[in-house]
Image (tube, rainbow, N blue to C red):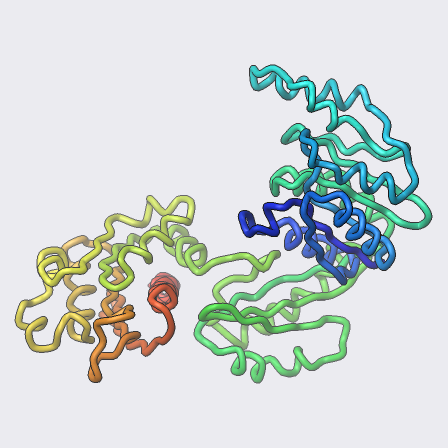
Length: 414
């Protein structure tokens, strides 16, 4: 079965919003063994929308549209689909009452033009919207299926998962399940070489590498009659890879999304450890990313942005003579920042960064991209020297990623 996703909305083409719906739907369809060959995006123009939907229907078994279900004159995706399938539009009283009830719950009057949202192609299966006003629908005709979903991601995901996914699962009679191994500390080529026997295998479990900024991941996938059956094949391979790569594996997830701060926060809170940070070139980015993890308040006691030398001396106890002899960007200063703040704060783990993020400020001896990251715990202080390149943002993000990984590893070995 081949599926195609059509995102509708001029705001997508203008770059005002990002199409995360297509990414979400592609992952969910993959888990059903449904191949997604094409993504399209089209604005709120009748002719272009009709042409786009016609092309999708000509080459795909299932066409899923997102957006274009609102109450305004340019929300015409249902009308265009009905025209292409040769179906009349019909008013659904139950949907209209549900829309009015939604406004009643908000304490607002329901505009009359919202009646447009209660119009559907004749014979369509109506998909109630439990998160907003726009119902979706599912139309089957001549061996084709058109699924029309609202554009807001939370509305789309809720409707697809609860009302569309089960129908498609019955049709496919099988499931593809994946687990994603997130890896830091090894390059993509190293991972590919170490895991070659799985990546190059023609067996029923496939392993594919992907890289992103500063890290990489492996997708381990298998097919089965159910998700449980597929995962029974996936997990033995995942465990073998984890054993091979060791602490370089920081997470195994059921979706490609995941972050180093989640891994660090999970290790800290699970062990009841406390952490403090002193940041120069990263400017609080390490602490900010840690705060993304729910429950980090039990671990993160204090965070300092110590850009100025005076702040390094005041909060971290860096010796003035160290700064004079070696400079703010040095292994010696990073070491004293981490050790000094640990003594002052009493935290179990302290992380410090100092470097030159650019674009200016570099010298021949200390070029832009030179960063020192230090981590202090009961076992002492470890300092890592980074030689990074790229934009200021890239250097800061890569430095923060290394810092979070050092916190994670320190927590594992605490």
